[in-house]
Image (cartoon, rainbow, N blue to C red; front, side):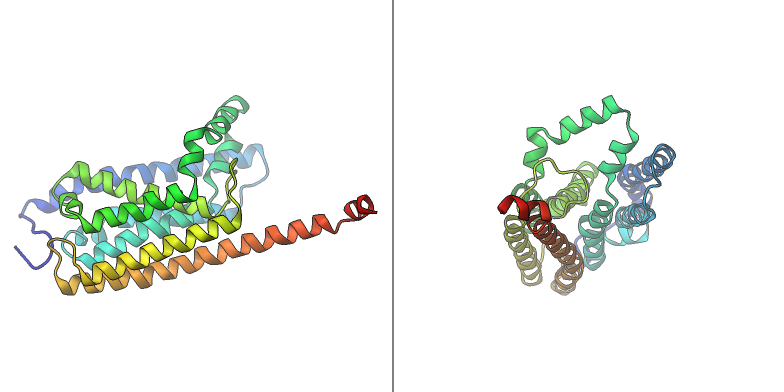
Length: 274
């Protein structure tokens, strides 16, 4: 067995295609459905913003790159490649796809009865729980701690089922965390900015501490050198993506504050005060 966490038999490359295809398929399907929805929405309403479509395309691209192709294959034997895959799948792809406002597009595309049903789902209790910043942060950061501090990381490379579950969880938890912090789609249960900011800072701290923990305590089967490189990629790469997320969050907070000030200083408000 080599110094990394996995070894492969001669037939492994062919076997690796199965989880890659299964993991990449939902993202490819999501891309096709999004493009179709753009055509339908633009035909029945005003044109859908091009930048949102571009964000969705690049989000799907980074998600597929992380689960299929050379990077995904290398991630089995190279922990640094695995960590790049983690950043693409759990942070960058969710951010880009959140910027694409998929729920807004779906609501514009569906018929009125179906759109109302979807709205009821978005307003449901389970949706409110999953979109709560604390729950989303726990699923996202807590899931990463579970992956890298237990035997789950090794099991992921030995079982196709666990491999699929882990990768889909990383993406979905990352997406839920992103949309719980920045709002581009309709959110029936909006959480105040200050509350989200406090949870956001705590989540960033948890992610940073985990990267340092990986640096000092390699996951089972990962060499110390690989763990050090992977930990640094997670730390600095995560910071780079978080800076974008922080910028968007602060921009939304500033815009909301200006809108409240404009309302409070409007002539109608001044007349009511008099």
